Amino acid sequence: MAGVRFGVSTCWRSRSISDGERLAEAVAALGAPGVEIDYRISAANLPSLLAALRRLGAAVLSIHAVCPAPEGKENAQVAEAWQLDDEDDHARGAAVRDVAATLRLAGSIGARAVVVHAGMVKMDRDVHELQKLHDMGALDSPEGRRRVDELKRARHARRGRGVSQLIRSLEELDPVAREAKVWIALENRYYLRETPTFEEMAVVFARMEGSMTRYWHDTGHARAQANLGITPFEAWLENFGRLAVGVHLHDVDGYTDHQAIPAGGNNGVDFNWVAGRLPEEALRIVELSDRVTDEAARSTVEWLREKGIA
Image (cartoon, rainbow, N blue to C red; front, side):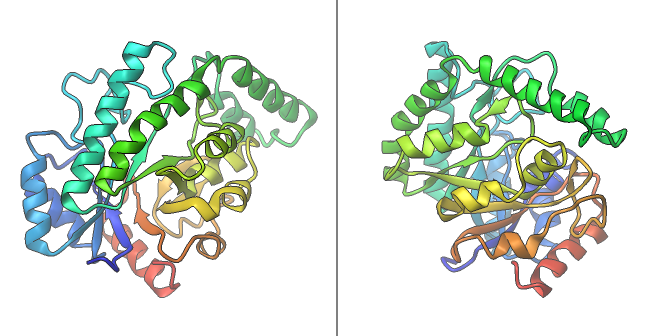
């Protein structure tokens, strides 16, 4: 299935279906030929999930690190137990080991990319304040623009050695990725506090040129950040699109992402524009909230196919 590039992430139902076989059947029933395995899959459920995907003829295109989920992870809502940008080298080393294990898993089952979250800085206030201004229709006011600028400056001031630590982690992961023949896919994020920001992404790719580190575009994150005044929607793909090995496809209503496509909401995603700026071989992965119904998920897959985006 080397030519398959379109799939659905198991995240759509992995919160509500823990059994690996049932989860595989639910995702495969949407009709996409491939899947992405998400970070909520436990070590106990991974074997049955993989066996069922093989039986169903569904190609594993990508894996979202960390997979399987680390035992004892304190927050089940985040992808990792440790951060690749952590200033503490012990914690950073643990993050590297977790991602390395995910890369080896991906290589062993023929997946092409591992989607990676890099970490975050500590901020008391983040996009929640911007969401309130958005709801008030005040983001484009002088006060709204001032608050966006203030939060961006605060984010920059708190980054410390995070970017250099992230680059160090990626350099250590590079030989693992080369041996596994799997891309390290660094994803654009939703929250301002998360690493990397748009500016930090540019620094990372300048330092990692020629490496196995590439870009993973998330349509919902990009649209939500634009709608909140943080980074223009077009900036990510205009600058990093040539490095994109994959995309998470989901729509946005205002700042609520992981919606079915098309959501028909406030300032949603222009998927035709996105598709026109992706490399032909880039993976296309539908990444939906578990709030999305079976009918809406099937409609999403059908719509993307009809538009020639899948």
